[in-house]
Length: 232
Image 1 (cartoon, helix red, strand yellow):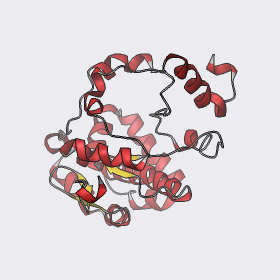
Image 2 (tube, helix red, strand yellow; image 1 turned 90 degrees about the vertical axis):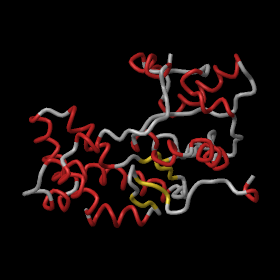
Image 3 (cartoon, rainbow, N blue to C red; image 1 turned 90 degrees about the horizontal axis):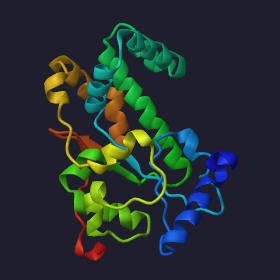
Image 4 (cartoon, one colour; image 1 turned 30 degrees about the horizontal axis):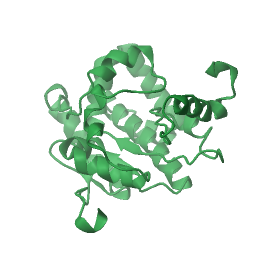
């Protein structure tokens, strides 16, 4: 059982068990999103760890958080932001909870960006909007970055066979998984919140630093992901 092993050994243990069933498998995908977890194995000499930063539109996250947070949790988010990033906390003292969400998004993604920079993987950034709008090209680009080949079956992730571990709560979600744009923020967020997030100078400075720009439906790479003949 995994819990009997040191966490730094989990990935190799899982890979060895999977290879008993299919010895052609050389890659293990960890869908975790916490930097603290990635830091535990990024320097493991037994692994060639490659991280991909899949970044979502802050307006989509603001919409999700607003739908799921209670008033009490919204208040705690403001306090947490002030404790973790005092400057951001000061900037949102007299502003709405949507601005708190914006800086929560910025704080989380900046931390990921800094982590990628430390591991020399700062180019491994993919916007969710690009993934949805040009899935094949983006997946081909990702596969090239991690040294693997793109396969058509990757477009049907929800219907593909999965080997390894998966959280019980996500089993059905995985089966019904589709790649589609989430634009509910356009209807559910107040226009003032949408405008405030898009005009946020700190967010705009950050997006520029990672070569992303605003589009009508999300944030996108400044240069597109269409694969040219020279890249194939």
